[in-house]
Figure 1 (tube, one colour):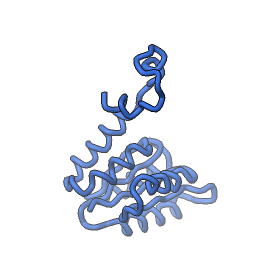
Figure 2 (cartoon, rainbow, N blue to C red):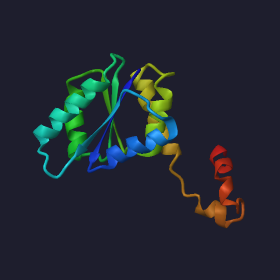
Figure 3 (cartoon, rainbow, N blue to C red):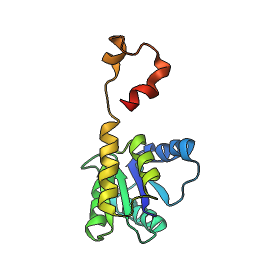
Figure 4 (cartoon, helix red, strand yellow):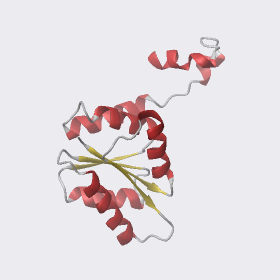
Amino acid sequence: MIGIVVTTHGPLAEGLVESLRFFSGDMGYISSVVLNDEDNPESFKKRLEEAVQSVDQDLGIVILADILGGTPFNQSMMLALNRSDVKVITGVNLMMLIEAVLSRDIVSNLDEFASRIIRTAKESIADMTDQYRSGSNNNIDDADELMED
């Protein structure tokens, strides 16, 4: 199983993993690493390395970071540049994380896994306001139907 580490500035990573449990229960081999105000890059790096080690099942690890260029991303990239089995994806969101957990049992190739996560995350971002305003869907409870379009 591909390991997953979520890393962000502040408690977002913990919140995303906790929200994920709402949808999928306990999923194993997933960890969150938060950059706190009191952290320096070295202390953060150590916790990140420990998290990667804790989810490593020899099938690869994907680190989902919040912001391109931020400390969580930078430290993740430094780690990834020293390991061929680590991918770093930025712009973490809940849909990306759900897709990662649901697909890691069916996709064992790390490149394909990363592509699938990115594609799903991009497809989940939409401005639905105009569809609702135009009357093509006036019932907010039918949002699942729109997602299928």
